[in-house]
Length: 151
Image (cartoon, rainbow, N blue to C red; front, top):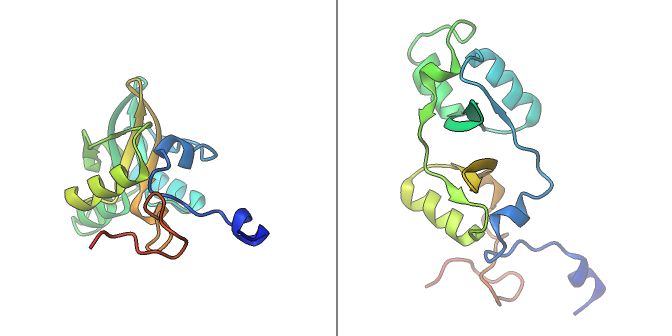
């Protein structure tokens, strides 16, 4: 293995979600935020979804899709509409100790793009399908550049 190969940061599907998100802060809002404020936060942070927390408890997520479908297409004013009115309630979650492969499979099978990450009943992060770009993740033991989907 060359030094360049050793230094490359290959994301593996057996990496835990917690390890993958270790250097990323939790980004969220309360349900009392306006949709406009939540959108500004998503734009400023370069993300497509925020966790929604009330009284230290995960109550939902608000996504770009929620805004597009429930606010814009619903002809609602994002400056007057509250996040709690349009968020996705009680979203599926994944344990921090789960693997990226588990997260990827759950999102693909469930047909959604964002998963709140939980540890001991507390939300600690959010993972997105965008976080695992095609061709980047590898199955355990696979050589660099190997396909990620089993045949």
